[in-house]
Amino acid sequence: MARMYCGIDLHASTMQVCVTEQNLSRVLDRTVRNDLAALLFLLRPFGPDLSIAVESTFNWYWLVDGLQDAGYDVHLAHTLGLYMITKAKVKTDRRDAFTLAKLLATGMLPEAYVYPKGTRTIRDIVRHRSRLVAIRAHGYAALRLKLYQHGILGHTRNSAKVWDGGDIEALVADPSVRILCSHELERITLLTRQIKETEEMILKAASDKDGYGRLKNVPGLGKALCAIIFYETGDVSRFRSARHYASYCRLVPGTATSGGRSKRGRGSKQGNPHLKSAFTQAAQCAIRHYPDLRAFYDRQAACHQGRASKLIATDILGHRLAQAVYHILKEGTDYDKTKLFQNHGTGQGGIPDSLTGTIPPR
Image (cartoon, rainbow, N blue to C red; front, side, top):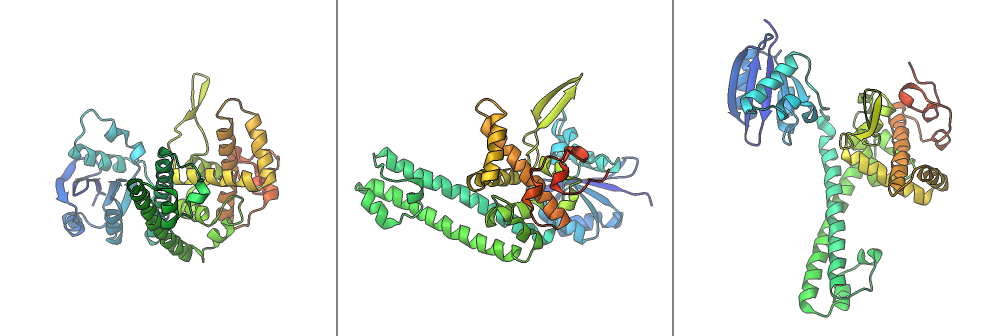
């Protein structure tokens, strides 16, 4: 029997299923409710050798996991590369599902990484913690802004982090303003408790992971940033080199070359925003506590002009830290600062040989 291909255009409550033969003739084109049992019953006549493409939408977890558990060959399509769907003049669910099947059959499907099911929930908890921290930071800012509005100036960012109800009563005399501040403080207290709960769960899951333990020796990385980098990276072997890993971390500017002319800065939003944020924070922390990294940062900032010089220098330092993290996770080695900034030339893909201490393979 000739191999058959299936494209699934997944939505919140329904999905469009299209099955084609090798010659792209359609044998099934139907809308199905989001129910795994109903989908498996629909696909059963096509046998277990059916290859399936699913677009990486917000709710792909249950569908991809269920199809893989049923023994199907499942491919997760990368949304960014699906120009035939997103840029099409005529866009319908039937066309989208057929396009997914066609791309899969022709070997042109842009695939995304299917994060392992066993650790996916911990990664989601890491992301949840980051969101809670951001919301709490907004709460602190809103609380202090409310005090500034009423001319109350005797406070700092650090002092606000240890306030309780008694401090608000001492600072604010107006009852209406006091209740606004008290409610903000109550939300901050709740968020702090939730952040602590998520941190305990994350550290419990990561404590016995060798890679996580090694990352704690990298400058600028504390327990939280180590968890973000470790779980967002996943299987580091999926990256061909440190250069590709740094690009995935949004630490490498894009390049567009045409007619002998090159422009930089393209595709800055492509990659993992959580890793970008983590390595940027690590670089900012490192320059505050490590004099040698501060000196490197100052040299890089001096090489660039304008208001973006500090931002560029931070990205360069974050790029170096990302390269170090790649080799630590890839090779199972400890961090060695003597290899981080040595000037020994470059190996494959412009990767400094000093980052590995070995000659990269050709």
